[in-house]
Figure (cartoon, rainbow, N blue to C red):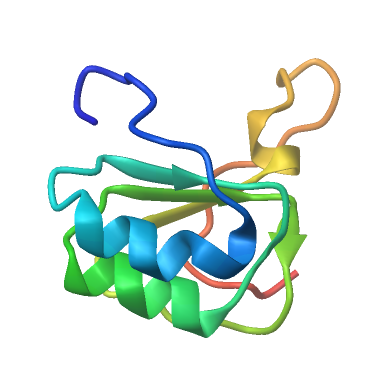
Amino acid sequence: DGDLQVLGKVPVSEVGEMVENFPGAFAIVFDGKINQLIVDMANKRKISYVVGMGFKERVRSLGTRLLTVRDLKPESEEPAGPRQNGGE
């Protein structure tokens, strides 16, 4: 949520159902690759961030910020900023 409290933990296959049950979700953070289906769900629910291990495919986002593990590393290790699509 907006206070960075974990609302729930579920397998990746149940992310869609979880998002439906928590309309106030601030971010989706998961141990998997970001795909267009997850981005579309996040955009529809006005979720601010999706954080995953990488991108499964090229994606388009209409407002949700997309981050990967690379984006979360300290700048001294590897400079990488937030991206809006899966173009690597």
